[in-house]
Image 1 (cartoon, one colour):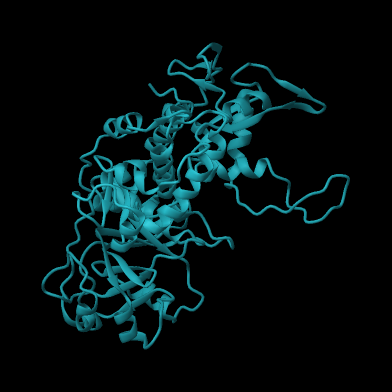
Image 2 (image 1 turned 90 degrees about the vertical axis):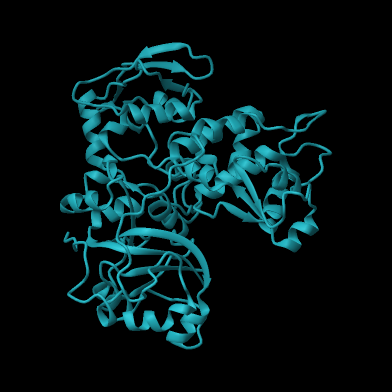
Length: 509
């Protein structure tokens, strides 16, 4: 896992040895491109997180030096099939100090400076997982000076490739080409002397002006219209839908036509009998400390659909609110608060499913829970019960950890202290405290696991029981004390994971 040091590549600083352009496709939604960009470029990776720290290896010192605030920005690439093709040459010849232009949907969407180049398959897999074929984005670059912007990519692509409508893969432009074609893109925050290396200071996000408690208070204090059937769900539905977009890695601001179509469908389904479908009301009336609308002036009150469409309006969380909501713990609190304050428990599962947040109904999340409850993929009607094929993925759990936690506790449930006897011994289940599936993305580590009997595994996963700060197991609906959590000195449990589970149960106070 070699790390290229910070500094100017070779001896030159201008001309052929100056800054090159690395044209980097962000990737499609099918391959997880927008979500990966959100996770490792916008949000950044906390180097101290045990999930990542344990696989930094010999890169640790150099990366901690490059990112003194502890939050790193990364991107990666899969080993190319052709070493001398465009992608192979780009990976081999890009250098520290070169400029990366991220591309998506026929536009350049961000620029950054390469701080380091290194090869670390283990870290790449922890950050982005693998492709369906098992490939890893193992050729990694650390990024500084990340600036998002928007520029039409077609003029540059036409100049280097002739008439084409897409950047199909990684491509490196020489310093000479960058100088010649610079005006076709003109990315922001670059030195005035084109051809000199860009500044290589680490990207440090500005501190958020919006505190978590302010954001959560805004959710609990929504001004909603109250009719015969109770409070209107217009604003809460719009906010949950927008949180779902953030969790999926989409842009924080949604165009009016998308908002009108999708939130309108939600209002038609959950707005109540006789309620009008008026998505333009929450679109504009949510404006305030956590929500912004682009495309018209503040003096224009309650614009109608035609006006919003004409001006190309967009709406969504302000940047600081979106930054907070991209953190798993804050997002879990927000979903819980909106759900409990504005929706009946009987309606909630379907509401959260519709907005893409069904994973918050269980501790395991989407990836495991949904597959566990569906038929195995057998493809056929053989046997007494029909089976149906199911497409999906589940996290690849470390079986050694599963076996270890069961050995430590000798198959005795940490909740009820009972051991389930079966014909050839005893049976228990290893439960993750903070689910490793989406949207929780907890670590697959022993400190994030419990040994439970099947009944208490299901209750813990479905949020019927929780563990309080004193390690007492309580019933969620009334906080009744049930058991003392059974502990073992060899098994260290991470309190932060237990706290996350309490958040899902609404017991984080």
